[in-house]
Every structure is written in C-alpha cells, then in structure tokens.
Image (cartoon, rainbow, N blue to C red):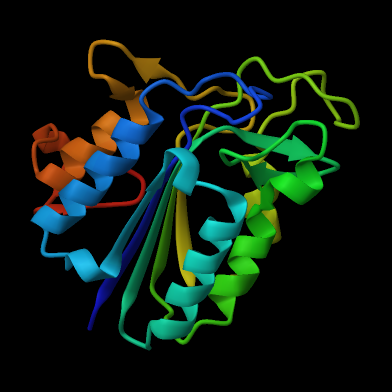
Amino acid sequence: EKIYLISIGVEEYYNHSFDKVSYAEADAKEIADAFRQLGLLASHSKTLVGGMAVKGVVLQEINYVANFANMGDHIYIYYAGHGLSYNSQNFITFYDSSKDSPETTCLKINDILSILERSSCKQIVLFLDCCHAGLSMSGVRDSIPVFDTSSLIYEHRSDTFLIGFAACGSKETSSHSNKYKHGIWTHHLLEVLNGTADSEVYTNGVVTSSAL
C-alpha cells in the first residue's frame, strides 16, 4: 500500500491574466511537508509551484501517478490557485494559463477525473482551495465566473473512486489570511493533517468529511 501526492500551488501567472493568489505556493509546499510528516516517501511526492506549475507538467504528473498506482494505494491531489467556470465547465488554472483561451490553457476538472477514473487505484482524494475573485471574462454565465461546485457534485454523484473537498461553495469565495500566511481553508486543513485542530473536529480520533 503506497501513498502518492501531487501538490500544486499557482500564486502568480506568466502573462498576468489572473490576479495573484497570495500564499498559494506556501500552501502547496506545506501540504507536502505535512504528508511527509505522516510517512509519505519523498519519491512518491511531487510539489509543483512557480514555473513548474504549468498545464503540461501537471497533466504529465497526474497521468503518471494514475498509471503507476495500484489497487490499495492512495492518491492525493492538492490544488491552490484560481478556479473558474467557463461554458458550464469547471477549470483550474496554471502558471501558463490565459483568460483569453481557458479551454486550451486551463484544465477541466472533468478531464482530471477521467484520467483518475481509469487508474487501478480506487482511493483518491482531491483538495481544491480555489480562489476566483476579480476575474472577468466573456463567454461565461456570470459576469464573474465562479468555480461551480454544485454542478461538479451533481455530475459525479455516482462516482465511487474518489472524494473531493473544496474550500468554498458555488456562491462563496476562497480567501487567504495574512495572519496565517496561508489560504484560510488550507490553514485549517494543515491543522487537521498536523493533529493540531480543535478537539471538536475529531470523532474518536478520526476527522470526518463533514467536519473538514
């Protein structure tokens, strides 16, 4: 039984198409550190930040781990950056993404799920700390495109191979904290992983999905 982690933090964008996502790189790095403290082997962990957090590299790493992991293994994917909805599809963005061409420079969540669904591994967890404030594009259903978690839940309501956690709902925003120097949701996720969260979060030493 092996554990694999891909931790992605997109803080700044090459062509400045998107606003800066404060502390996204720190989020991704510390998530990886927390997993290593829990026993994750460095060889099974990939942290992609800055110029390494480009669409092609992320796709390559997801395909690799999906093909390599076996039944009984665990895959964890963490993402901090801008999420958006475009033409009724949910996307995450990367260092080389452009708001002028989201379908070619961003990555559909459904495409990620399709790759993972083909994996022999059936224990997969996604953590999505998506920030989308300040985006404005044409061709979307709202003036500010939001990462539509409600439609994502509906589309994959019958899937059994993965569980996903999102920082916010469809009508909410994901924010950072200068005090914690992290995304607020990721700060609390780190507390859970490090065992320092408030006692009421745990039930007999276990964190449930509803508590998280």
